[in-house]
Length: 124
Image (cartoon, rainbow, N blue to C red; front, side, top):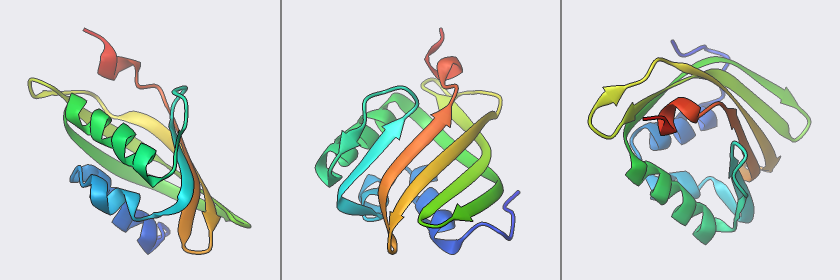
């Protein structure tokens, strides 16, 4: 359910996420950019972002995002939607609401914060 108000760059970013393409994902960041998933410590710099995202992708069988709405305020962009995780062993979880906040520097992401309750992903 992709909303027409979602900027093209976000659609491209999440296409990389949903295909677990870490190289493509990292290309959206400034060299000194940071990425924070939930309450985990931030990964700073493209190399750390690459490592953190690779480790996460290795923990899951799949991921799919559906978007609700995007907002822009100055250099900050926000995206709301639902994420569906497929755990190892092909167990598909119910969609979970998420919100992403992007601090932009021109066309690149300097800061990317994901707010999501990922507890179901890590439960037995």
